[in-house]
Length: 491
Ligand code: BES
Ligand code: MN
Ligand code: ZN
Image 1: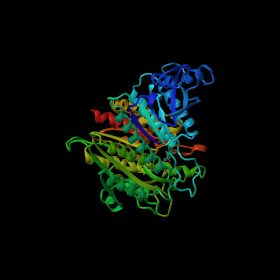
Image 2 (image 1 turned 90 degrees about the vertical axis):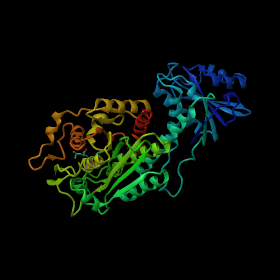
Image 3 (image 1 turned 180 degrees about the vertical axis):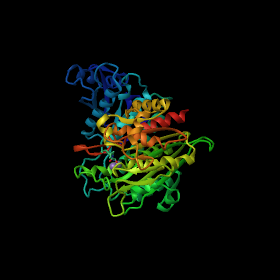
Image 4 (image 1 turned 30 degrees about the vertical axis):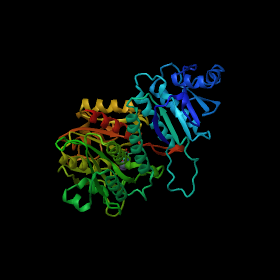
């Protein structure tokens, strides 16, 4: 689905279909009135019929003629100024209904509807993001197409001349490209998406967008004494990788922001083997990695004025004759030792060495993203990602970035008291803290390595993918990260 802006008045635009917002069940916007006037009041008449349901996203088709053969009335719900959520519902409903028609090109006037607390740029962006979400397909592994081709193919957004609306749409397209990349990587099964594949994908993106790429292998990890990361890789035949991508969009003196993503391409649990049911979903255990790579794509496509480093520790977590055993003690790159009581708590082990490794880039801020704990899904379900940070300012920044773009996170505690649960009689700490507050003690574990910079941790176990009939990667939290970085680049 391709989006573009145009400054032609809506009444004169040529298209297969127009998406026309209806406010509070009765009112047309300026552009809607223009179209209505050109077509002899047929839209207003249809609205008066009362056939358009009030619910946001309900639609009613009106046959027209000439340069605009049809209009789709789209209910924006009550009240007249709708909530951001209702707007997104309306966009989805409108585009999905338009997709049932033989319409290749649509114009959408939906951004003429007033939305509480949001400006036109936000509404343009929301349309692009919702449209691209609907249009996403993952069919590379099917030998024949199953779903119908994407419709409408093109969506034109009429905007007043002289405005900067083109920039908002370009931003949203770059964010959607990042989201699609994260979804593709997440959906790709673990026999295809290995650590080596992730590294090759990162290198390819680096060539395409002019980034610096470096991929560390086992020997380099050994030289750096990354004993925690290496302990997870021991059971696997696939070689682990540490991927480093660097983007420079600001002066070399400006400290970079670093994003660290958990890249477990398959999590069997290791010797602490997971139960069989739904284990296929553990191919999604690299969605943190996918999201930071996706965010890098967005930033580089937009040439944002900031410096960004993306670090991805990636490996499988497998049982095997050489695999790490419960009770084993390993030394992390930081020098701190860890008693591995449960080999299924492997995410924190690969992340802790990556958090130590990023120190060399002297970042101002580090955000790690990980499908880290089932406990986070129990705490927050599938709506908010879990947010952990000792910094109130950084936490607020991330919360606002997420809320604004409909990819929210909820702050969880990180108090000292929880640290006690990680005590070990045999090492500096254990890698698990027992059942209570499992997502908090996981974050506490990471906090012991996140030293020398402002740090936040996003637990995306509940938000990175969907289970059931619509199983698949969501691309979250790419929109949150991109929005956060856009705000940082604005300064
Ligand atoms: N990748 C999982 C977390 C996970 C589980 C994400 C289910 C989404 C759905 C992680 O590596 C893991 O296995 N965590 C354990 C930690 C426990 C052993 C302390 C968990 O959550 O059960
Ligand atoms: Mn695990
Ligand atoms: Zn895992």
